[in-house]
Image 1 (cartoon, one colour):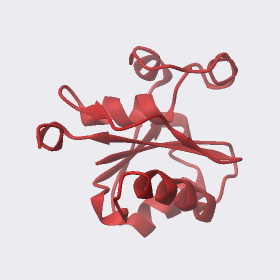
Image 2: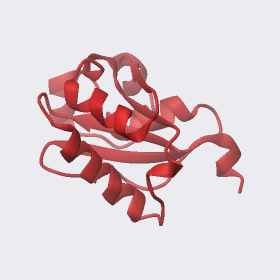
Image 3: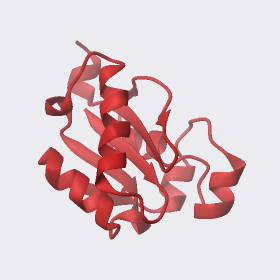
Image 4: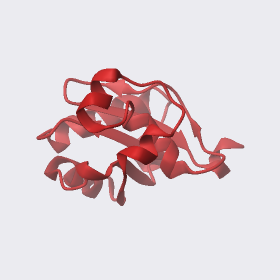
Length: 126
């Protein structure tokens, strides 16, 4: 699975992991299902995101806002005004999953983070 994360500046790893855990649990999954964390490229330097990816034991990748804005998912005008794309978590998960990947469900949100899961193509066919 690709874990897409959207986050406010300063969000800590514990909050990101709680949000990720909620998204995973909603699908009967745990952290071992995560192969990659994906987000907006400008968020890769956030200490909370980097610590969360380390805790999960997976790499983190970022995508430019223009790439995320081109992914056909529902979004928010507020998010678009703030970061240049209407969706971060869902769009990043799908962008990293690549062709044939599929979104498992709408994002899970907390006060400072959003998490979404996308199945990689080989998982999408199972």
